[in-house]
Image (cartoon, one colour):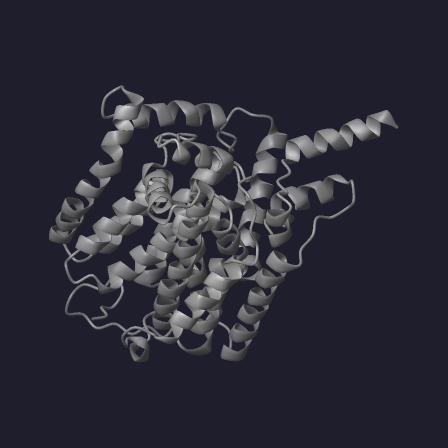
Length: 405
C-alpha cells in the first residue's frame, strides 16, 4: 500500500507543486519492466576489461577471496557478492562484477520509474524515469568494474521503501545497512535523510529501523574490523587517517589552483549526472514542501564533503542522481507543462548522446584537457578504449610539449 511521502499517519496531503500526485498512487507500474529490459540491453553495448580506477584491484582481491580496502573501511559486501556470483555461475570475477552492476542498474531503473511517476505527474514523471535510466553517470558506472553501480539500485530502493514500508522502518533499515556495506561513505551521507524520513512517523520507527539495520551492519562491519585488527573502531580511525592525506577541498591547506580545480570537477560531475536539468534542481530547492527538505538532506552531506574536503571522480555522483532528478522535477513543475517536458526530453537526448557518440577533444589546450578528463571520458567510447586520463598527468604532458618547442 502506498503511503504519502514523509507524512505523519492520518494526515492527507496534496501539493500543487512538488507533492504527491493522488492519481499516481496506484500499485506497481508494469510498463517499468520494459524500461528495465531496455536498460539492461543498453548496458551490454559498451563492455571492457577492468581498467577504471580500482577495477583491476577489485578483480584481483575477489579472485583471491580477500577484502579489498582502497578507501577504509572498504567494500566488504561488494566483494563477497561478486565472489558468490563468480562461484555460482562459474565465471571470472570481472564477469561477476559486470553481471552484478548491470543487474543493479536495471533494477534501480525500474524502482526509480515507479517512484518518479508517483511523485511527478504525467509525461514529466515518465521522462524523468528515462533520464535516470540513461543518465550518463548511471550508465557509465554500470559498465565499469567498481562499486558505484550498487548505489543506482540502493538509493532508489531506500527512497521507495520509505514510501511503502508499513513495518515502520524494517525494510528501510535492511536496505540502508546493505547499501552501506557496498559503499560505506554513501551510506553515511544518506543517513540524515533516512533518519528524518523514518523519524517523522515517530521515535518507535527509528527504533525499528535501528533493530533492522544493526544485524546487517554487523555482517560486513565485524569482518572488516577483524581485517584491520585494531578493535571495532579500527575501520573508522583508519578511514579518518587516510582521508586527511587525500583531501583536496576548500578547507584543506592546498594551493588555490587545486581548490579551484576541485570546484570545476564538481561542476562537471553535476553536468554528467543531470546536465541541463541542474538549474531546475536549484529551483526545486525553493519549494516549501516536506519532500524538498528531505531531498536536500539526501544531497547536502555528500555535496558539502565533495566541496570542502575531497572529490575524485564524477562517478561519486552515482548516489545523488536519483534524489537530484526528483528535486529537478519539482523545479520543472514551475514551468508550463509543455516547457518542462521539452527541457526534460532534451536532457535525455544529451545524456544518450554523451554516452553513445561523445569522443575526446583532439586539441592540446588546457580547456580540452579539462573537458576530456572531467566529462568526455565518462562515455561509451571511453569504456571501450579504456580511456581514463588524469588531469594532472595530461597538463604535465602539455607543459612538456610546450617546453620542448
